Image (cartoon, rainbow, N blue to C red; front, side, top):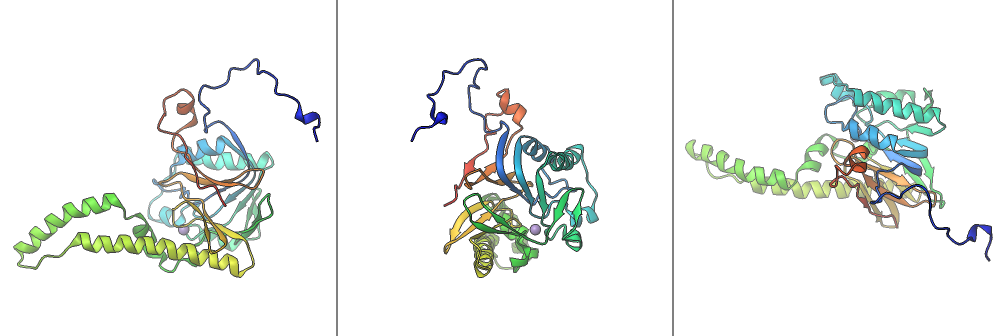
Length: 290
Ligand SMILES: [Mn+2]
């Protein structure tokens, strides 16, 4: 049945439309999930994170752990203006009515002592259950509790092609030294290949363990972070979502008004994009949820 909203489209007048539809323009989401920002360390891509937050409105923002890296800050203190802007932007969102829920991770576990408390309008929770617009119930957790070999994760998870190429070069030097010492050949590349295989296995094991944990609690899925590997997939009928990180991939998980979940990668500043300086900076919208 037609109603008054079904009016025919009027020709657009006034404001010129942007020539490219920039994914960097301000977007409104139902929910945003970010984690592993590692504020307080040099690794944090705070410029991009502040830019992303400034261009993304949402009703609910989940900060799923490793937001402030207390481990890293113990080793060496690093704080930048951009990192302050990240915090300011989050607090501004609270002021503007966004519900902000912080679920601490292992790097900011000091905050776990305050779960149940609301600090500066930010609700601290050990974990949460998020209901999507289409009624799915998702466990929201950082994920370190499900990680069997947490201490090894950053190394295992980040071994890739580049490391393999470097390993081949190092292997030459290493074995030249071994020859000089009269030691037999030892294949570093074979060793690393084995590690890479273990990295893939580690990620798969982690994903399955987290999904199993959500299923065991009668939930439809899980949103976590921790392994810095953004992903949306179905694991044995349970939805597994990982929102990635802001150290390397600069990714977030978004939910729109209809409950559709997506991973967005924010790889360039909106300003650069708008004036055409950042053609390579298109966030990739990937992995639409089932
Ligand atoms: Mn973590």
